[in-house]
Length: 469
Image (cartoon, rainbow, N blue to C red):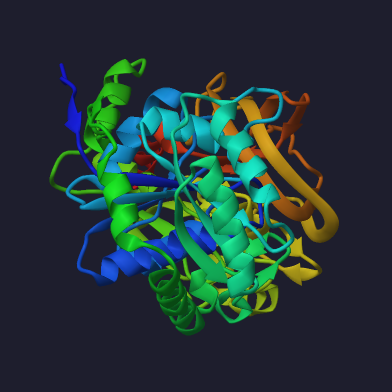
């Protein structure tokens, strides 16, 4: 039995009234500014987003980790936070959308406000003040009073136009009794470029991203009261929870399996190759940790550069990313495409999510891909976005039929057909449909999942990799 204990990491949640207010600017700048002071800063992101955590990792030198109450359940938010923040001096959590926005039709579920309450963390509200003056006080008052359990510790004003504008804003907020913890002027030169699914990932612009993060740190250092922010973070009370552990999660999942699963011992470990590089940047840090805890040797590779799978590969994970941006280069790497196709044809276990699904298709925007699936993918003008509740339709190396998971879709591509003869998932909410492909050892789908919610996925996949060898 694991007993809970106090987690006393100072922490802040960076929120906003709406998307586009400057949360990423402030959160990333704060992380970098505090890290430059020599503090060990733990970076976190509320919600399913993969891209912002890449900038957080660049700012802090630690893995950016997600806290998603929909996919993992509210009960795992604090334990996952404690796992990521272990040994750190400060944790900064960037919110998602507006402070009180969450899963559609589910109240506060998966909102920044819920995460803040679960972490007992003070909230700093980033307000885009570019088109208002005294009205800012009414806006902030509304957010501060909407839920008395959310502790609004102060405001950072973004996109302030002038000294006079700043004076009017400060006067209004002083009357409302809300501390102003920072004022940032308009500075488009520090913004990161965006495209069809949000910011361009760090891996695609590393040198420029390093410069952007440094500029954000400079801007935040100059405009924010770092001492007051640190004091606010240190005012967060201890959390009474046990940190999540991949080893304990795997042990529990293995013991609960029917029949009980065997985790490989400390000797030979099956090699699970995990796609990375600029085309496949979407992953949750906990996935690799769970695979390792389940007995796998996790070996990264880059489909843009490597012409062969890692030596001894007996399992293949191809997660999310932007293969549509790199379709010519992926198509040109014919040796690796053939290696992936041969591995799948031989029954090797393959887990492919979103970008991985596109890479396994016959073609992507007319360019040849691996041809593992009898399907073709094209870019679309339509954005598919939202949380999903799903049940595994077909037995696969990833999940037994009937396994229930919550996930997230986020893409501007279409695969035709959308499901194979043996679909991967049946969606039960918000609409009913089947999706994805199970074929031999392949499980390919658009659905992004968080394996911490269902560690049996890592146990089952590692067992399949060990059996394949």
